[in-house]
Image (tube, rainbow, N blue to C red; front, side, top):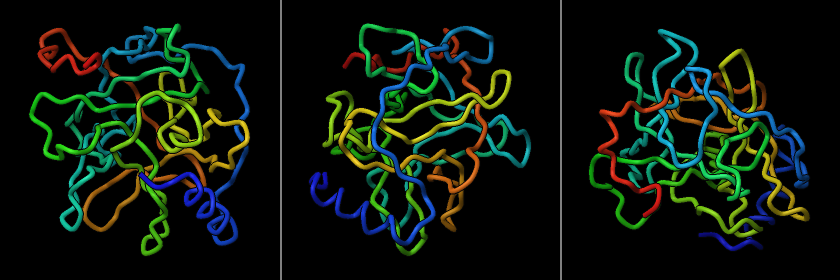
Length: 225
């Protein structure tokens, strides 16, 4: 993992050459619950598929992807229409609250029904270092779960409401009040090989959360491992 000093230095360099917005972390007071596709509150530790709310050409669910040139750590990619992808679980900054809430800092983690391909990395989402060739801040895995602060700044995300049961992700962490951080919604984009999540200079992409059925609960109990 890059050092905090290097990360902050990079943020100030990119600030002068990219339209992405910056903010300093401020605790939020928006506590409305996020709802799944059945209208129930999202719960931490419960597996959900994250599926595009735009049908057809809008694609399917989110899943880890392995680019040919650099397969590890896996990236946060989108599968085709009709494929719900791989489930995720959410963890709150406030570990005493088991309801996922709007505009609250959360960790997001893929959970697998198969062995991990990248054995030395985590499945927790994070924002990668700036990709100069693509001009993107991609969302990848190998983040850190918990331990809020400067060293884990890139691993904290938020969920924002877009429609009735449609939401978008946002990267605007408030886990370090004195740390400069990007503050942008997250969209999908192509790297020439696959559709992936990246920070947006405009609107975020719309998703809904579909609770994993009981029959699929043979997913390893990695939520607590």
